[in-house]
Length: 180
Image 1: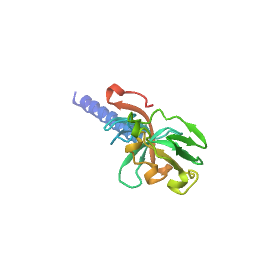
Image 2 (image 1 turned 180 degrees about the vertical axis):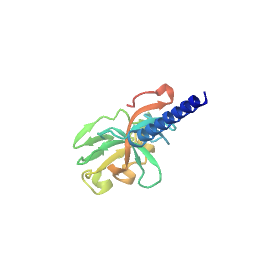
Image 3 (image 1 turned 45 degrees about the vertical axis):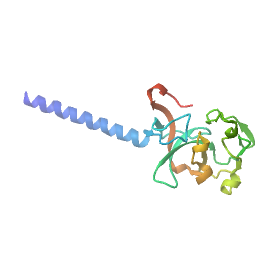
């Protein structure tokens, strides 16, 4: 009887160790949970919302990414606006990428007419000294432009500082699902 108890305990220990190794590998190399801090991505994500980030996704324009901040020991979540080679500018609150205007339904707008413009005019040249997004970098903006520190403040984001793309929101539960 005692021998079978030892075998069962050993079997459980092996199973738990195997599960822990799988969890570690998935979290380090495939996906990881992240807590959103601040209001820079409202209305898409609020403070303390929780999301799952894929570490294996190919980053495309308008994806939301988590990256290591260039100026602090923190992680930021922002939306990719410019990919390598893109020309980005904002004119009269309209985003232009490579000369093409884009609507931004995800941007937090203010109903106050005095504050109806949420993004000041800029060109990449004015902000960064570059006319195009360099290879290996992204240009990112927060959805809540009036309260976001983003590429307008700290420049381009190196592709190797990107942790991954936001794929799923799991908290708060009433907003469970794929981000928009």
